[in-house]
Amino acid sequence: MGAPAGLPAVMRLYVETYGCQMNVADTELICGLLAGEGFESTTDPSRADVLLVNTCAVRDNAEQRVIGRLSELRRYKRPGIVLGVVGCMAQRLGQQLLDRVSHVDLVIGPDGYRALPELIEGARRGNRATETRFKAWEHYEDVPALRGDGPRAFVTVQRGCDYRCTFCVVPITRGRERSRRLADVVAEVENLVDHGISEVTLLGQTVNSYNDGQHDFADLLSAVGTVEGIRRVRYTSPHPNDFSERVLLAMATVPTVCEHVHLPVQSGSSHILKRMGRRYDRRQYEECVANLRRSIPNLAITTDIIVGFPGETEEDFLATESLVRQIGFDDAFTFKYSQREGTGAVRLPAQVPEATKGERLERIIATVREIACSRNLQLIGSREEVLVEGLARRGELLQSRTRANKVVLISGPAEWIGSYLTVRLTGTTGATFTGVPSAAGKELTIVG
Image (cartoon, rainbow, N blue to C red; front, top):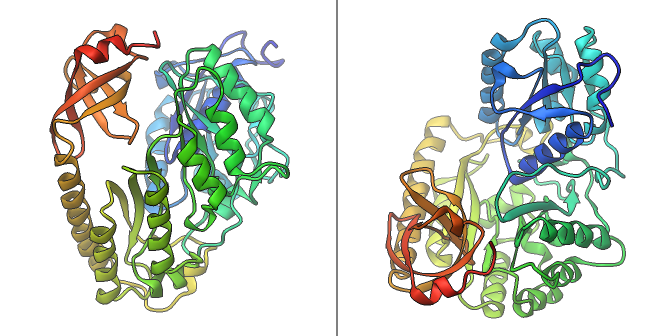
């Protein structure tokens, strides 16, 4: 298809992405949709005709960062140049954002991306607009994502969330949970293999509650994991309540499913978990971890932790700290509780002072790092299969990743990108490893 009437023959698109993997996947959809309308992507905002910021709304500081960035992007505005905000922050604020930031032309939520070509054309004519209606049917099945280079890809299998955790804005910004048809997911994965992808990460807000009406998450893991050409299957983020025996069996018996689970806990205190509306207590989370480790030996487990939730006492915080030591997490994303308008926790009494939140965050980060470093040191000298993902950020090294999601930096030619090697782990900074390919590993190169 050509560009809509009233637009130049070639429009340049610049997109910045904030937040989770779901936003990364949505950016790929946006770029694919607009590429089909004649747009070309650019990494230089000064050359763009359309600038979009794909946003996160989980924490207040993420939104404030976007507001600041929009002020910076204002310098690229001139007649005919469109500046838009898309994603979760756009969905949450809607018209408020358009009223608040005069140089923003478009505010579009996650279900409104199909309207982008028409709304961009209107914005170039001076018509500012919002599109934040939820569409329970929208999975963008006919929109080919425009992905970057590399051997890995995100595949969205589920949108929205039916859990109502009192701290979380996702049900407000993403709507009700709905799952794609299994056959459509498999078809997308098969197409990815045809384009050189050998590792996929299945995405959903509570991905292991996937159900298309005929198939559950166990069926999905089995179907995707047996697609010819797929070597690794990952997924994020699951909910502790949705690990059925069928899912555990699929994880244990489908060889392509990797030995890593990102399992958000949020707190180690049953009292706080109840106030959060998490629908499990500490004992039930511990049982979930035990079941996972019983089913999948050498499983790496990472997590999310919130400190300073309303009502959190020092005793509650120490319970979280003790859980980190007890479980032995391989890593954790740690956050201070952030009030989100429209969520239940805003109304809870006993809000924790910011200074206390900051002090507890420092303490839990130190504990997580101590445990993660200890676990990683035990891996030095071991041999691991890695997928070489691309160039590392520093030096002439390559970045690779183990099945357990450990990043390993190695020295080697760029031709190794996309290949599977066996490496010996030689050192660690506490989070990232260094490694050297073994002679046997070079023989394991299977993907060019």
